Length: 239
Image (tube, rainbow, N blue to C red; front, side, top):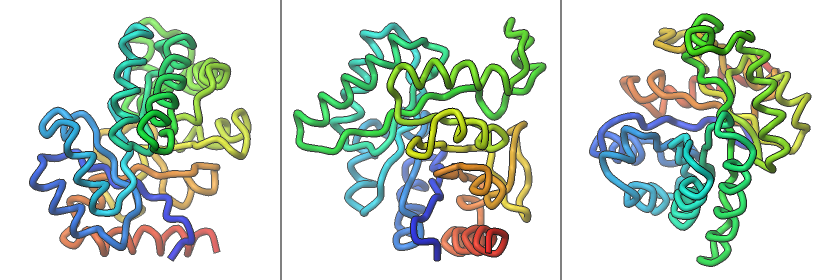
């Protein structure tokens, strides 16, 4: 097994299924992702329940609002004990800075480690045509780079980006930054609805620190075995 398991299992499902998956993945996965589907269905308690099972929790709500609102939301997420949270880099530097400062302050107040604040650059479901549709004329790779620079100056801990941009983000942000990549699909899985994807091994080789993987694990007949298979694939390719 890899010394530091980079897989974040995305629990984009109903609460009962999410908890069943969490029990099935104990001892195999370290990180679980709680996104909008699960958080809005179950509320903040789901974070505590997953933490009680021994997992680190990535709360992926992609906060995007005026700085005051994002600061308040980030503080509440920090008080839940989340290990990571996300903001949209397109919200601008003031908004991102508010999230960083408020989450660190809130975590300190309750005696918890501060969550890593990650800036979402361009969603992995969005390609150049999708950006053009909403008035962004530059290619996705250039938009990612621009937003990552804004995020870096705002003091975030890392970015969420396509694995295809991981190498650029690592070069731009340095070795200490978190580079979290959704859009990761093992060689044996279906592609799904994401446009800018790569395999787990290619993502790690490019500089990703964490891989967000959902359906190849959660829809597998035995999810724990799918995790083992992905780790073996990474180790085999990088050996």
